[in-house]
Image (cartoon, rainbow, N blue to C red; front, side, top):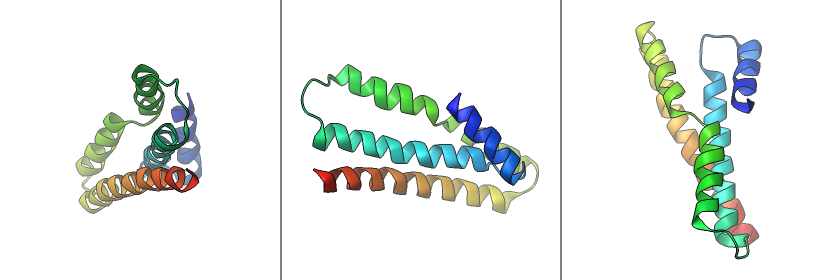
Length: 112
């Protein structure tokens, strides 16, 4: 539901010409995954099983982000002939998502 709300809000604010919602979701989700993974690694005390960690990171946060929508958004941009915009979206999404993960991990490492 949160993913849909972010997507709809971005569509209302910025229009439908570029997949701003999916980009925002994937960057926010990647940053949050970095925070949670860092917290579980550097700050959380014992008691977190591998299953609990996988549920939080893969299940909850992985369910918030969406590679399939990213792929479809890219295909739609290409089909509309907007190759440059599609390339910008792919490079920007991957770059910003990776920056988000590393930033989240760095913040938690600094707090530890």
